[in-house]
Image (tube, rainbow, N blue to C red):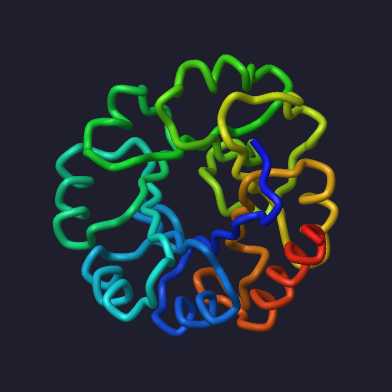
Length: 210
């Protein structure tokens, strides 16, 4: 599934000012990382406070990696996220256990059958396609070979992995994803967004859509 207007998710938000900058630039969704090893890890209480100041119609997404169920439930009780994003080896049953829609991240490499992944996670709202980097779960700044994406996946594609203001036009024009997801590509430092890069990134997406 493709869209005339490609949606944009700014992930790895840790500060209220970065959330405001992303919303002002036209982001459709904000991503919050609930994974302790990540430099972008954020506490549910801080996310709750950021969410209270968001304008309407901006989706909030929580990123988890093989979480303990109680941790997800506690996080949702504090910060009622709109969508869950799973980046580990979660089984489909685990992904649907929280009464929230979800997307499943897949680290793309030649031996991964994306059609089989789409079938396995058939209840996902989409597949987030990211680069494979051993020992890392997203936010790597690494791009994968877009030619590995099948022409007709039965789930919407959220394209991630090494996107930045310089390459996002090409990415959208070649892949035609439902959405793009960026974290490190719009940062001044890990966990700190650059408002100018966010603006340039979203401008590149809109230019590719035109």
